[in-house]
Each structure stands twice: as C-alpha cells, then as structure tokens.
Image (tube, rainbow, N blue to C red; front, side):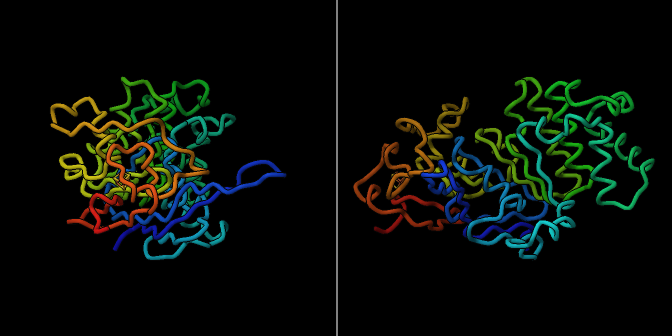
Length: 319
Ligand code: SF4
C-alpha cells in the first residue's frame, strides 16, 4: 500500500485585485503515489506546480478537488485541528531555511518546540534530543549551536537546522522542496547526502522536488515530470534518463552537462514556460515543442501507460 496517494489533484488559487479576480490552476488533475522507503523525484521548471503539489501532499493546502490519502486515511478535507496528530508524521524541508526557523527563537527553542508539542517528554530530555540531532546533521559541538539564533548561522548551517527540525520527530513522509537551490554549490552535495541518509535510516517516503533532473535521477527510484501544472511523464528513474519519451523530459535531459556522453537526443524548446493563469489550449507544451502537430494545438493529449511509464503526448497515442 502506498504511504501517500494523491488522486486527480486540482489546486486553484484566486488571483487579481478586488475588482478583477481570476483563478490560477497551479495543479491540474495530477495523480502520484509514494511508497514507504521510496524516493520520488518531482521535476520541472519554476511555475510547473511541483511545490504546490508537494504542499497539497502534506495538506498544507486543501486541494480544490481530488483526494489526499495518507497511510490509508483520507485527509483531503480533515480540518487543521484534527491534522495536528498527523503533522508529526509528515514534514517539509523548505527551499528557504530562513522561512522554517523562527528568527526570534534560539536553535534550542526551534528544535525543542516540536518535541514538546508532539511527544510527552520533559524539557531536559528534549534538549538532549536536540543536541543529538545537531550532531547527526554535523553541527558540532552541539552546545555551541543551541544558543545561537538563525541570523548567526550561514545558509548551509541553517538548512542543516531545518533538516534537524524536520527529522527530529522521525516522520514517515518528507517533502524536500528544492532544498539546495539557495545554497552555495560547494555544500549542495553534502545537504543532499544528509537528507538521503535520514531517508534510508528511517525508511521514509521522500518527495524530492527540484528543477535539476540530473540531481533527482541520482536519488529517486521514480521520477515525475511536470509542466504547467500537469504530469507529462512518470516512470522508473533509470528508464527515464536512459530513454526519455516526452519532448519536455528530453529537453530537460538534453540540458544536463552529461547529455552528450549519455547520448541523449538534443531537444531544444522555444521560448519560456507559459503563463499558468492562461495556459495554451491543447497540449500545453505545443507553442514550444519542436514536434508539435495540428492536433497538439487543438486537443489535450490523454495520459497513457506504456510499459510502466505514464506519458501525456500525442506522439505515443492512437489519434
Ligand atoms: Fe509536443 Fe504534441 Fe507531444 Fe505536446 S502532444 S509534447 S506538442 S508532440
């Protein structure tokens, strides 16, 4: 049984001014599921809806329609006060660590707070747990860090604190939302390894969100590729890298440094990602796709399955 199962998720936001409101559909009918112990990589450009989908999966957003099942329980419409017990089992590692650690807290307070809220332990035990996890994330000597505040740490150190805060309750499900994109290139690998080590040790389901398909392919067993709110390809990570089918996946892969070595077909898209509040009709990629046909402009392709792969493209569908 999947630990997390998202079915036909639609997430819309109201945008515009008081006088002229409209709706932006950030996620459009996306279904994915993640097993316990599995790393699922969600990739796509900024504006593809992947972070929104991650937040829906944690029920930080209530979807407009569709369902969110966690460990067999339908939590789609569960009110926040009833979600509190589940919150300890599902955590977010955000892109910006400064957003996850209260600037007025010391690191000790930031780490002790979730333990005192969710576990029946006293403060002394909680501080001991905080020290232990600081050591696990490489912030030593732990005592020195406990009294510091977020602004006294570097971005990399604070991301380690954010990881410690997310992991201190030993959750079953983690969403890591571009956890390295705000960090210096020299420390990215160590942050990814840290998350991956926790995931393996705690046998967690991990949704790893990134625009970097090369990075995701190193971590994830399965990859989902999103474009303008829709899932356009999903499959086993190795198969996707070896033999990408969707033109958008091919374009993402042909932009990675090892593309030539891996003999990945070069696909260059025209222009920039479209406007999510006004996506193109038919296939959403058609204004940019080098393979676009007349049909692509008029009619949205369905999602079909080919050998354990989901794909949304007319090139693979009986017209
Ligand atoms: Fe390109 Fe058409 Fe496939 Fe869309 S459906 S990705 S436009 S070939």
